[in-house]
Length: 250
Image (cartoon, rainbow, N blue to C red; front, side):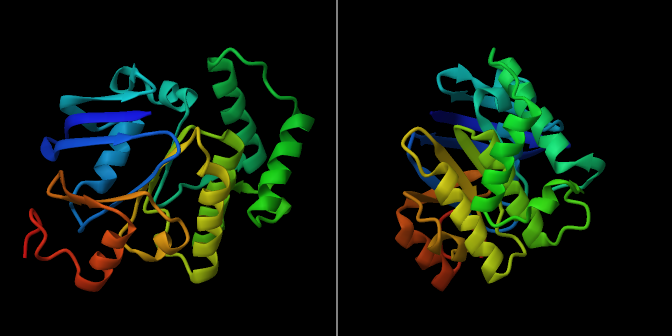
């Protein structure tokens, strides 16, 4: 599904990614961990097409297509979803309006008919119910006045409605209490743990991985993947930290 080969990227003239190679197949969940400044968010932003992040070498394909040649909206229409560490607030735009426009824009890009208001509301309410989000919050401006947990739960609802092939989630567990963490884990498992979908989950901590059991765990340090393993690697990192792993400064 996602194939990254020797990916180098920079932002503000500074090299951050220094040769990432990673393959994610349908049905797999990959977790990326690493110290601050390792390049985890840069990897997510580069794959998502965020302005200001320039690829200087390497390639990335998504379902066989050149991901790096696509505009951000084309990546989204192709089935890529980028979840943010700090979801933005959009005053004056209701969740329902925002999500219906986003979903129908993607459907149009794929040559599909747009959903009517009634069809969309039925889907949105079903996803909100599944993920424990109050239906009234769908009517509120996007993330305005939401707690950190509500923002992440709302992002899970967005992901459920859009139903991507690949979700790249950048520290989606940041700042969450235990109930919100369980809700996020439930959302990832319910929406994305399917044979035709995949997840790249970026996290600092092992705790989310108690709820989302990854198939593979990778350590990113100084812009490179320096170690890979199974779920047991996350427990090792939780116990011992990153010091001592090749590529991680003491």
